[in-house]
Length: 127
Image 1 (cartoon, rainbow, N blue to C red):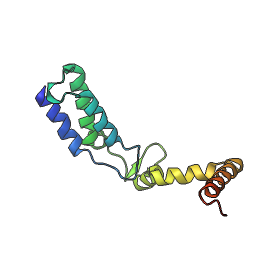
Image 2 (image 1 turned 90 degrees about the vertical axis):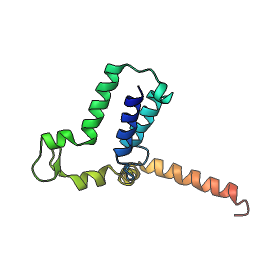
Image 3 (image 1 turned 180 degrees about the vertical axis):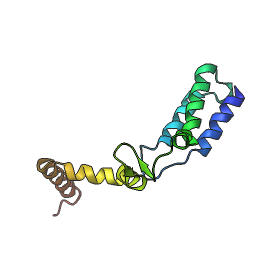
Image 4 (image 1 turned 30 degrees about the vertical axis):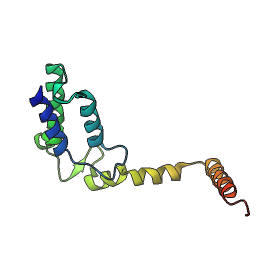
């Protein structure tokens, strides 16, 4: 079991963190799941078959196994043919926040403004 645990730790160390995906980064999620799965470290009892299946799948993802096995034309992703860099930008936390802000209704924006104004008045009673 110790070998399996160390293999997962090594896999987590090699998986890059993506600072543009705050709170949604797959590397953080995988690290959390490994910590939950191996609560007792090397002494954790796990299903060997399931553990090997999960490890193999994660290893293939982390080494870009499928990207290399099925190369695409240029540097595009998905059926829409969007450039990889454009896709990363669109999926960044900042872009998603901007999109959420743009799609808010007028009424939602007014309620937020009123709430902020009330908080400011409570903080500064003399205004």
